[in-house]
Image (cartoon, rainbow over all chains, first blue to last red; front, top):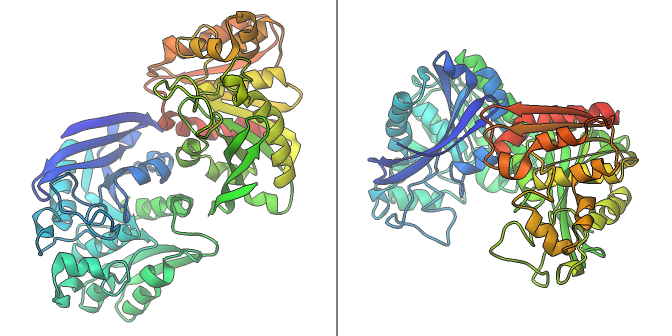
Length: 277
Length: 277
């Protein structure tokens, strides 16, 4: 693991690191905020998965998570959204496919399968590295994310429910198998057999029996992608009768940006901290 | 005035605007955060001046001022750091001169004098526009800034003390006439007669009789520019016997970045809010 940068912030340390990834067969970069409490005790880990076009950096710059994470004693891990590098397949003019658009899945179709193994990377390889390199309590993990990263957080929580004590999302893509901006990517990554797509779709997973006890979702009503890509009401319908609790909050005037995310960041950090205590 | 963007955040509105500037003879861009309180009452105005290489956007993205400004009811105005555009003189490879490095002064030397009238822009033209276009109480103004913008805030407060009720700075250049990274710029903007430089130097202004009642300065001790460019102890020496109060706080491990600024942003906002109440 290589240190790219380390900056003191709110009494803790915001770091950026890179490492050669076996899963993605390229160097991967990620950000970790370590709160001041980690000096004396292992701290719980909260994973933040970012949306389309983002790297680890967007939420690090604009998410405004450090002040309260330092107060609550949370380690915040922010991975990249896809494999990177000149050797990695891409559709350079399509922001919904390839680099910046890994959709947190393991691709099965060429040329994507070669590097796009983000599900394995996020659920296996990176947690092992984090557990090894940072002062963390891996028995207390939560996960959240934005948009494509909200999709990632929810599907990963549903698929590995024993690992996480909490899950939340900002404006998640809850049904990527049918959303305008994700269905074409799923076909390219996973092939034409749509039954394989259901493994990476929160609504389909719930309908097929996956379970996670409760979710918090915040969604802006002035979000341009609400009707075409996000549609949180589909998840509300999917969980009916499933013993899954959903706190879904719709906010007038808020859009899809980090102005929206940062506004509700504190609420999400408190949600997770209560469940990771 | 043209709206570039407006996003709801923390119950208020973060906007970015542009307008043709008479002082700078080019289009200028600036950011304004309007807190929710402005719906029912004119709010005090806090000016944030940014440092070298920055535009209005850096602090808007990374400064983390909106949450508490929304709570305290402060309008936050973030101007650009220089004139902009293809017609504007520049030294493209020198980050300490030209675009992004206006030093908040009125240049007298060509080719700079044509557009580099940032002192007039910040103290006359932009306040008139803000007073006209936003719901603000211009009888309650404070000013702060970072690095070159800390210099700007302190010199402007010292030169127009009746306008401002509060002034603070993050890692300011307190004596630009002698600092490595500013003296060459002052010579190019103002000419070789160094007596004219003193009008844009906080230490020199105080020694020459300018007065402002109190300052808050935060400075990181791991700041790479501390000894060559910033040296807050020079200001501490300059105000001796001058009836000027200085709260100077030095912070172990903090550097010159927005990680430092955002950490102490809340303290500065409260400092100003108390004096603007």
